[in-house]
Structure formats: C-alpha cells, structure tokens
Image (cartoon, rainbow, N blue to C red; front, side, top):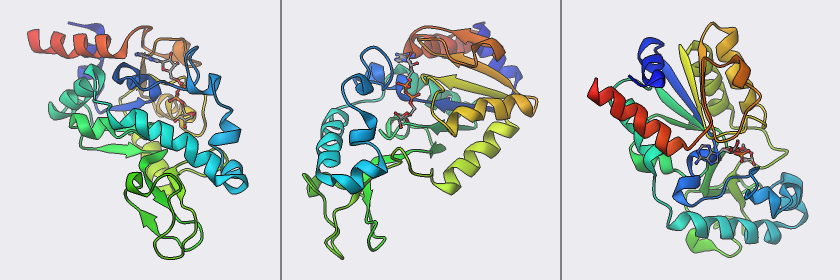
Length: 240
Ligand code: APR
C-alpha cells in the first residue's frame, strides 16, 4: 500500500490544495521554478492591479499569451488521479490556486478557485461580469459601459474572493489530511492554509518537485512528479 494512500484512507476528510505544479505536465509553465513565468516577466508589470490601472493593454497582451497556452491544455495524470479519489469518496474537495480549470475538466466536482479563472473578466466601472473573454480579445471591453475589462483572475494587490477563501479556510481547518500538490506555498493568504490544518489537529502530506516551507511539519513528503506519484497512489489503492 502506497504510504500516501494509507495516509489518505486513515485521515479523512482529505482536502487537496493545488498550485501551478499540478498543471506543468499539461504543458503550462509554473511561476517560480527555473523555467517559471516570473523568470520571464515581472509580475508587478503584467499581473498586478496597479499594472492594470496603469497599462491595461500591456496586461491583456500578457493574459492573451496565457490564454493561448491554456487553449490546448488537457488534464494530466495528477488532475485525473485527484478526480478519481474524489469519485471514490476519499477526497472532499480541491482548493486550487490555478486559473486553468483543468481540475473541473478532469472531472473534479468540488473545486474552490481561490485565484479566480482566466477565461472570465470583470468590469471595474459598472460591475458587469463576462463569463468568456476569448472572443473579445485583444482588449476586451464591457458590453454595457465600454470600459476595458479586468482579467477574471486575482491580481497581485487584490483581495481574494471572500466566499472562496472563507470556504477554503474552513475546509483546511476541518481536514484530517491536507494533501498539498504542486505549490511553492509562498503566496499568502493561501500559504497559511497548511498552518490552519496543523493548528486544528489535522495532518499534512506534500507532493512537490521542490522543497516547501512546510516540509518539516508534514507527515509525508515526496519531491517528484505529481502525475507519477498520484497515479501510483491511486493504482496502489486499486491493487489492495
Ligand atoms: N510535479 C510536482 N511539483 C511540480 C511539478 C510537477 N510536475 N512542476 C512544478 N512543480 C512544483 C515546483 O517545484 C514549485 O515549487 O510546483 C511549484 C509551483 O510553485 P509556483 O510556481 O510558486 O506556483 P504556485 O505555488 O501555484 O503560485 C501561487 O502565485 O504567481 C501567483 O497567482 C499565481 O496562483 C499563483 C500563486
């Protein structure tokens, strides 16, 4: 029995927290690895709310490139393994920092998108929400007031959607196990969720290629491919 599989079985409910590392095997670069996006771009120039107010077209040029990368992206083994664990009643929900919607595409039903989603946009002038912006590119404008729309993702300097972060915090606090997959745990307030689980008596499991600040407080740590490790975990459950 894969050690992680045993931990998931015996520490229910298991809640999952994911980041960009769960989608790199789908061809989407992460942010802070050696090949990460923030090695190429300054996040405060292209992904902060100040940058949007200063130069919204520059921001949309960046997000249009992201949308292109996402257009052909498919869920990978990691997404599918987490959806399978949910279907078996072994995962309660997935809290994701990702805006790529690949967890839902893999079949996960309860996904909390704490950083929004890239396909949508919002009008800061009149409050209109646009569910799909692809056909409005290159510089999406509000159909009601004509203002340039803001990408539907949480930008640096913005607050997270209250309902999403409140639910994520409640799930982390009541989790028997928080399974952390593919995130550097460097961005707050999400980086505080593992501490919430530990402070409320739950355990941590971490699957991440690089070390994280919580490795020494986790009951299980695997530095490797999320797809490989989670696929092995699920198949070890099937064979036992
Ligand atoms: N398998 C396992 N881990 C991986 C893999 C993989 N295939 N690929 C990358 N990783 C790990 C990297 O080692 C890295 O530690 O995933 C982590 C991704 O960390 P970041 O790039 O910092 O991404 P994330 O934690 O999601 O960033 C949080 O910051 O830039 C903002 O809003 C953005 O949601 C994002 C937030």
